Image (cartoon, rainbow, N blue to C red; front, side, top):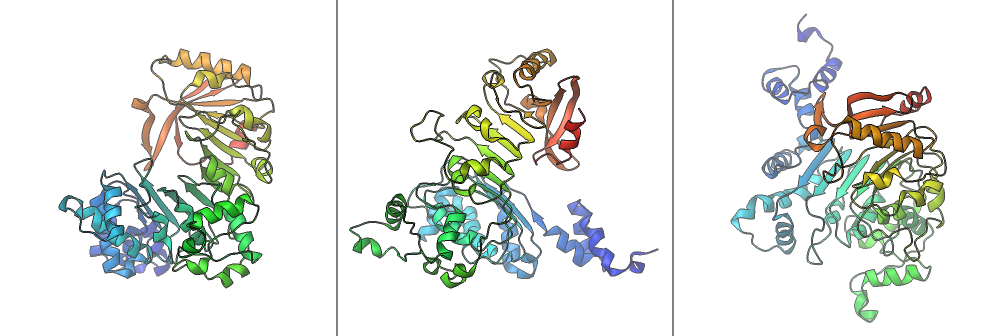
Length: 452
């Protein structure tokens, strides 16, 4: 049987199951029957996140041929070039750029144009290599999202300036199917969360102001007005009608909560304070930040309206990074529904003594970064630590320990993953090289742990 004998409806299925890009490229050039579907698969996902040259060539191609932009479903990039912020500043100010920055300048020129052509985009991931991406002279990157026609399911926005939420909020108001969002930062004191923002629009409690109003308010900027009014329990946000290419106010008034499907959230305390209340978040990655308060910080409390109840809905919790703040102990009373808990922490020994009063229903995942000054290498060191953890946490049934960095990363079935050793309470070491993808564990973990 030749391929010409197959029904046409199988062509897309065949092409979508081919993962080798050179093979797809060959089909595009040589196959009369599969060329269109091979082209669709080639442009379905762009995840070359580091190479700025390939990023620019890809954008150039879809801008020159908008038909190809309709095939793009997932677009992931990572800006790591040392002059990225400088080039963006140059682009925003429309000033000539140096020759060494011309490639990056071209990228920033094509980037907003291509975004408006990605009409079927579902996954957008943009990360920056620097912890802070500029001051007042660098405009928020989120402004490039204005007027984009796509309906995202996943948004990972790793670029952050203090005014980033100002442009993100009107964009998020248009996203009806977003269920996974990851943000670098959010000033929850100055900007409302999406639920509060939408509620305000729906209640017609919007005061219009723009940059010209600063002169009439004694030099106050719109950000100053927003902070003052929120502190006085009267929320004022800039009208979407004032935002270029953003949804009209009349449309926003008629809309219901646009984040009803949001179920996964990643970010620091500011992001969590803004996004957790008002949504049914079941998967939370709490990435502790250096600016997050300690447990005893003045005014720090989880018992704020809607916040504690939202924490009780969490089923999967990843907590930590390099900063152990707030401590796990302050969160434990609210983790009544957690079935998987993963800690990432520098000092694993202090974490090992953490007393979790309430029982975690089923599981506890554990990984950390290796500290050569404290940690021994080998199975015996891990065995001693796991024994201590099992004694400390009576509900703890399973522990996953990441291998040292030199042996940790691997690729399984074309996906990047980490290697762990898995330990169980009554069985000890059960797997010395367990491959775990960066995604959340499957819900089948409940059945696995229940059978222990």
